[in-house]
Amino acid sequence: MTAKPSDVRACQCSECRAEPTTATARVHAGINRLVQSLDERNRRQFVGLWATHLGRGGVQQMARITGLSRTTILRGQRELVDATVLAPGRVRAGGGGRKRAEKNIRT
Image (tube, rainbow, N blue to C red; front, top):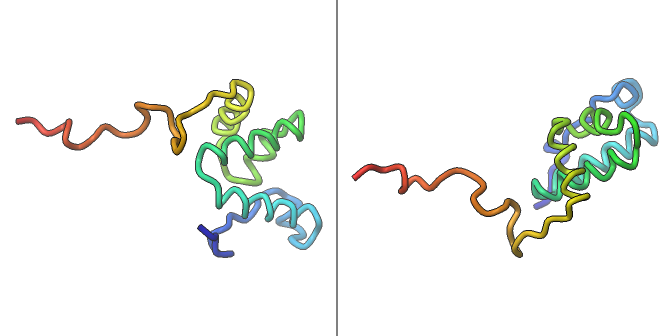
């Protein structure tokens, strides 16, 4: 899946809004392009890794850059530490997601 330029989220940090041609703004745009192409688990972990790299205030800064919630980023950080292994081809653990519609139909 290739993200169109219109699909990529614009960073909301003050530096990118003030001057969108700086090196920092280009890095933020690159992060958002990559985040757009990842599945939800890899997105959480990638942004969580960047937040850890940034140190104090990194979660808040990555939330501003990517638009992900702080709890999602914290979950990605926890997943990196726990290193839980899912079955190949799985993004969520078994039992995650909505119940099947057939199960809700009463007979």
